[in-house]
Amino acid sequence: MTTTPPEIVLHDNHTRQARPFVPLDPTHVRLYYCGPTVYDFAHIGNLRAMLCADILVRLLRARYPRVTFVRNVTDVDDRITARARANGEDIASLTSRTTDDFHKDLAALGVLPPDIEPRATHHIGDMLAMIGELIANGHAYEAEGHVLFAVRAFPGYGQLSGRSLDEMLAGARVEVAPYKRDPGDFVLWKPSEPDQPGWDSPYGRGRPGWHIECSAMAHRYLGESFDIHGGGDDLLFPHHENERAQSMCCFPKGRFANVWIHNAMLLSGGEKMSKSLGNFHTIREVIERAPAEALRLLFLSTHYRSVLDFTWDKLDDARRTLDRFYRALERTPPISDAPVPEAVMAALCADLNTPLAIAALHPLADAALAGDADASSALRAASAMLGLLGQSPDTWFRAGLDAPRIEALIAERLAARKARDFVRADAIRAELSADGILLEDNAGGTTWRRA
RNA sequence: GGUCCGGUGGCAGAAUGGUGAUGUAGCGGACUGCAAAUCCGCGAAUGUGGGUUCGAUUCCCGCCCGGACCUCCA
Image 1 (cartoon, rainbow, N blue to C red):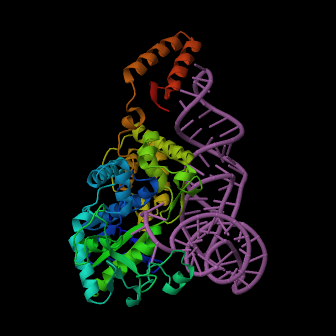
Image 2 (image 1 turned 120 degrees about the horizontal axis):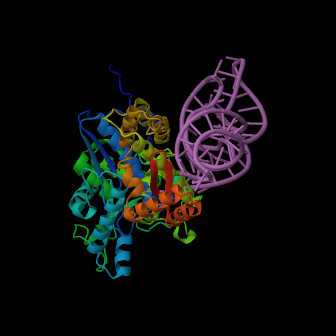
Image 3 (image 1 turned 60 degrees about the vertical axis):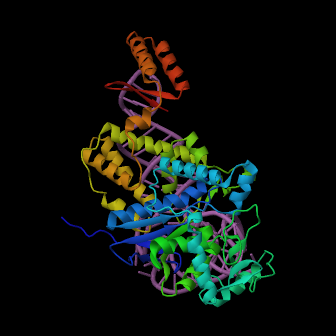
């Protein structure tokens, strides 16, 4: 029995169309995502892009023999400098600690690490080489210690984000630096004060502008043309537009990214997250209050191109859904490695339709609950594809609780029930319930789990 | 102001030019000493006004509402 696997279709935000994914090189798929700026704990909005990439990479790996996923770390940025100063900490210690925290958070969420995770500060030479080339070929100019990219010299500027320079000018709200030839010109290199991080360059001691690092690192690890570039849709402009402009002007034979993927923003309690509104949540904060896997399921329950509104209620719903799935695996353990069910694969291939894929899990869980071990095996395989249900049901339901004490109380309650002392039996249940432990009387005896 | 995206049952959330998934909540029932879990059943939705069409939730236009971006945010 052979069935043709469904074609992967992705919504390309450059052409604004869903298009069949055709790799530039079918033996080696290459993609780049913009990673974090490491000055503080990552927030749950950052997580969304990481998770979107994770699903995409898992799908590509299932289909292609070799996938190289590059996700950078931005470790030079004025916010980093400012935070280090405020903390009285040196920059290297701040960035390495924050990077480490970021890795821990993503690991807790089941996000697979990238194949290559380049750091901006390790690629200053690559950036300067690109800047030199852009000046040489007339796409950049020096002014007052800065090097600026000349947007008017690139006819394709604005194509990616679908806007024209003149339109942007009409709505501009920001004061334009006097040394710019065109208000849309952006910084490739800027001078550093003695107390700011800086590197020697032909333009004096300075540091890179925001966009050049991604162009330089994408080129170093993926070449002049690669398959997919992604990130949050707030990066579409200016970041991705500028990356593309730099790269295409520096390497005119390449086409930079072939497909552009952008995930929609996250809201929190119906509004954009902001510290002043009190609805700002770091990943760390959320996973201290609920299982990380519940957060993963919650995020995957909405399509990546739709706005997702985070609430604690939804997180709780996701946790209860996982309770049911883990109960199915516990009641009827998987017996074998099964292929990923076609419905799940088809959903993911249709522009990463994770909500539809998750919907396909429910009938499998129903069947597993009814005793179907094949369904249980399929449930596990499908969930693994989504990075879910990776722990044992026992861990999910009972990790970290004082089992001997609970079992002693259960034995005591059993004796009370035999004596038909339901007052005592219910008192024991209430006591455990106050500790977040739920008892379940089944035909085979009493089991327990965290509520 | 400019550009773009979106409005589907109480809530969440798919899909589709031809009887609108799935989950959750609600209600009723089975099971239970009581619960929990599980099972069975029941109601319940395409913002609004036009247009195209045999047929529109889907395509087109207007309106209302929400959101994002418009120079360093995922």
